[in-house]
Image (cartoon, rainbow, N blue to C red; front, side, top):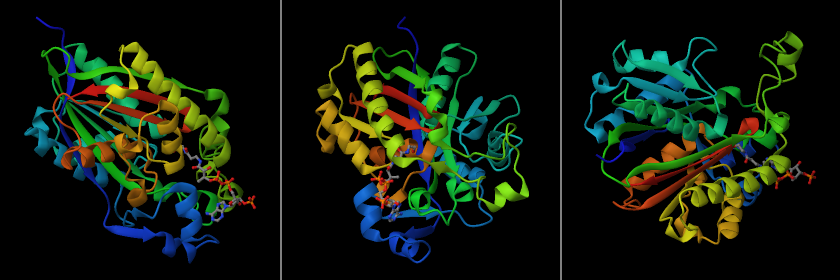
Length: 330
Ligand code: UT7
């Protein structure tokens, strides 16, 4: 019998109803539609309603993925939620999501924080757990309410982020050569300070002063992060292609983390793979961190951009600084 591999049985995504355009942002901070579009490619982003939590976005995406997979919450015995914005610091968002969906109490539920690379990390983790033979169906979600950790007075970051969720249902197949072919994960912990929330954790608990200074919000040295992102994503893509004995030309579609159009264009140039092979939706969502790849994956599938036999490359980069790449054959 062929060795078991992890396959994607269904995908789903959800974005909150409210749309914040670049023109709206120009009324809030000293910026312009032109600056945001030319520097990042973003035109608008979705913003959750005040009472809408990350778990609500995740549940909507998960329901769509379960329906696509023709499975029920009772079929799930492993739930991994990639997020940097759980509903509250403790407990994990996955437990709220388990409860809201009605996933059984025998299911393993936990959150995973690898920032914008979180979905690829969660995919790899779920795949290894499925390969152990102790789980049958995994639900992997990337969900973020970044608007809750964004400093709406800081024009260098607030124009970039958005809210949303994407989900996949995973199962095991014995058909040779399909599913998750391989993954490559890594991190540059020495550059963690370039993209972080400085206060509010155990090393630096929040104080009234730190909150007044906005140190409980995301801070980023964009230019430095940009350079490392391009290099790390290109290297991760090359490494995984080499690991699998594939050439870039064999990739039907790349689903990159949606942070900046210029980052994606640079990777396209370095890999000598035309932009038509890259799925881009950041103009409508902004950067949704761990939700960006599963939202794009779901959209690409539903738009008919992924066909049976196609090889898809997922490639991510985020705070940590983490990176990850995964190859999937459909
Ligand atoms: O998801 C995790 C990974 N994240 C990323 O990969 C993000 C990586 N970084 C980026 O996407 C880009 O660096 C940004 C979009 C954040 C910024 O683009 P940039 O071309 O690197 O611009 P910059 O930071 O060098 O800023 C250029 C100028 C500065 O003014 P001076 O110093 O040249 O006078 C900024 O103060 O633009 C100014 N600026 C703005 N102007 C209008 C910064 N933010 C804004 C703004 N509107 N929102």
